[in-house]
Length: 501
Image (cartoon, rainbow, N blue to C red; front, side, top):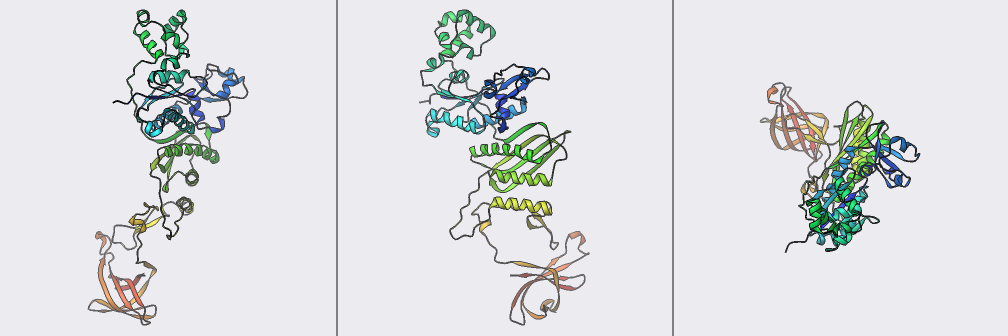
């Protein structure tokens, strides 16, 4: 038996305004309008509820808006709308992989195929609340309608009044649509005039018209409109691709040079990234900030944490330290923040295990040290793949997976390098060390391992040459010595370079 169809429609009015105010929290509770067009012919294309209560409406010119002292006028950003739309579609994909885009010019809309999700999210009412809550956490306010017919859910979402959530039971589609005005449907100008001449004002009145007579006068479009009014029009679902990309972008109204103001805006972007990452049960592994500068330049930098984390204050501090070390060379026009997801860190410490340092505090401490000593000078030493002695490079610290053998393993042998090397007087027997003097004591060699020839790179072996011996010796005071000695073959000189503990 096939699962009955069930659709949830999310409809966001005044989308150009909500897409901008989502990243400007200080303006959400203030009257704001979005202007579209070229100055001085700009007109209002979207506004928030506060501005509507003041008497502003769509289509007002810039001059008319300026007569109101309170509202804030913002320029429409197609890039912000495109980015926000992608984020909302991605968020909808968290409830079902089948999502269809139903957006309009100044409104966002999508339909989610939620058939068979009751075992995961519960009854449709609970799912509708979860959808509104999830989108509300992103700073977006919208209506959610749930019905067994896709067109019914979309039409209800457009014409719903007084409530932001409605669930229509199977067989009640026509009753739910009946009070809505007929203009809720996507009518052409001719269709609108025809229905107005007939006195058809609501969808209930349209549904009562006889189908054959309606088709004879309006053709198949009349049949389609009547089926939509009755909630019986079938639909071929067309899901869209939902790529997961942790990316946020904001366009600035004027060039910005103040770091404090920049970090305040970055904090809002980080909060949005973390909310989306938590919804996917992942954490931020690294964050890249790209600054678009005045004059066409671009400044980009990437910061990484020891472990993936959703600590906003940690990422903000790391970005702050990085920008202080590498400041942009011009005023900032736009900010792009993207992140790579990673699995949240899970650490299980035994009852008697020593407490590990907090990864977040370690990241900040390393960033502060790097700001003082320079990049590339903080980390751990890694031997180079060469025979050259003391050849190594520094790599950044990395924390492995907790509980792995690489983390829990401990070396029982420690090599203490002597700097500078200690010169030795060595007595040989059959070409092997027999005894030597070290720190005013005569040491007898018990076992000698070697020699291992060290000639550096193969192309300059004649320039210098060395052989290495690992010795186990007994000093005159009874102390045993485990050491590494080097013989310079060019100068026939012996040196002790390290001690094994």
